[in-house]
Image (tube, rainbow, N blue to C red):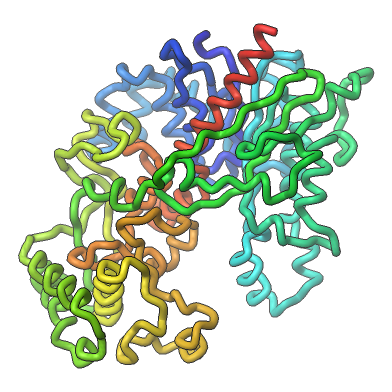
Length: 520
């Protein structure tokens, strides 16, 4: 059918949800979804989104060499777009730097243009309204910053960001919409009401929940929606809020990432979606990371070199605390890691030349023309943290689990006021968390931008936290997906994104629905 179905992606972030839809291929090998508009307010995420929209102006086998030269740092972004002004202009029509709720008139105009007016064409609206107030950790941090000021929490505009999405649904009545959010939304309350119950009610009848001007005389069935889970075969009438939760590790994503995703189908269309097909064996972090170039962390607050770094890591087994750790398995892993330190390791970079083939889903992750890996730059760590990372990763290899604070020798305890509470199993007892190689990773979040302690690499001979590219791999972004901005901005984009590989499977379900509507 070719590119028959338009996608309007709101709160697009760096474009993970749109990437999954754009990459989906139907049975005859064509890509039926066309991202017509992607709206994002963050300047760095938008820069990434814009670049990917530019990339998609070309067919996969016709992406110009200059795109790869940009990723390799050989030409500037301006030079790339100057060489292909037509494609850059088209990308600018798709990637819109705007904030919903601030200038909806402009955004509405762009949506109307993208879908060709307000007729009953076959298209889909996607989006994930920002979720800081709904994540459990986010609510905790917000309360701490505001000294538990409940009035400020209740009045925070971010509670109603989903209504900006809702207004677009009400105004344009897409045949299908997909809305994504964090699972913490299920326990969140606003002004005494359960947030998720309000959202489900509003999504069923958007026009009744928000004030938007719509065409007069539109039948009730063309303004209301049946809501579906993608993992349980029934409508919202027979669903609990938890039934909308998708556990990404059950669907080929190497990460324990749980997200609430609601599929809405306009009631006049009389079609029922299928559900996602699970896999028998979850993928591990090591399966998707082991082929990436091995790099070391840098030394912080002291002169850095590979030799100096190696000596710091090697000194771990010379510390008195090593005798406090029990188990032959731990000691074997320590010895094995120390032996590997003889290799000269670099610290990575924004582009690192490397000849490799992804060990898993090469056709998804790999791109032979790339000639290496981008966004693969290590952080710097202080000496004491390197000892903690070395201990934690050796422990995880020996015990097949990340150590809790009580497992750490006392000499490695951080100087935190609540350390005793953590050691006794209280808050922050997993302050240093290793991604166990043989299992799916823990959830990649934007917190990775501020703190690498929760994302320690499983290989003690690299002794570091995860790079942006490794986080992107766990999020299932293709290797030729380049993240713009400083490293902190890149981490935030990756952590906030929808996993493209899961989005691609959702796209298949949506495609079947739209194809049925088109032929029925």
